[in-house]
Length: 291
Image (cartoon, rainbow, N blue to C red; front, side, top):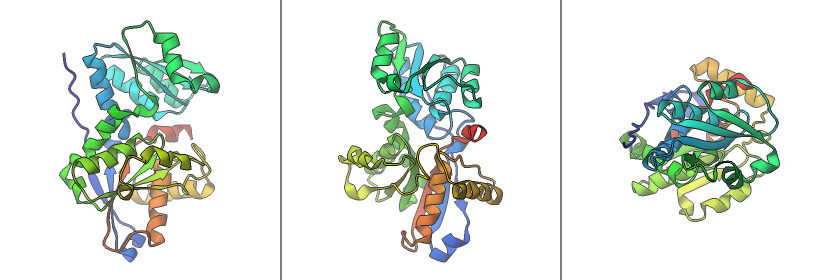
């Protein structure tokens, strides 16, 4: 029986800030974090076609990868439970306990901790543990790859999204940004996609985008805040101020860096007056409990 997954509820809200008004730009936030408490934001989009393909192949178990605080592991565990799969997660590093992993276990995910060296060879891990298992379905870390990008690209089919000059999102594995660029191209839009890279020293990532039109996107590498899962006191203060003034929570790994970068870019006159900007809030709020 075919699996049908409807696209999530993700409204667009206007953001008001004196700096936006002073610089003559309009800023909106697409609340992808509303999609589901645990299959949140871009994870819903990126998992959609992986789940459909697993069902089409009559697989019963989803196998994937992530760190100890991985939003992707949690989203996969919740999605597996919701859509009648079992789930298995390879976790990078020494065995630990935290709220994210406890939630994964509650959703029925079997957790297998592996060394950082082993974790670098994900295909080998899958083959060693599931090579002869006809029920297992491999999902890349972060839900990336062509199937993940396909799900994200559908965002740009929404009529309201086609009215923006700039689409902006945080970047980890890069699947979300690639999906957005693909969505802009597929719908013949003039929007430019901007990615706020949350990893330090990730400039080589630029090579992964060589097949896209160079004018269609821009990667920003200066807002990593010290590196992946690291942050400064300034960013933490910004997170608290933004939440208290807007009622919107931003995690420190991805979305606080994205919004902090956006405000800094506007402040430095990076965007021309009259620019209409939509930033994607891609969830990850459960991670705040672990920070």
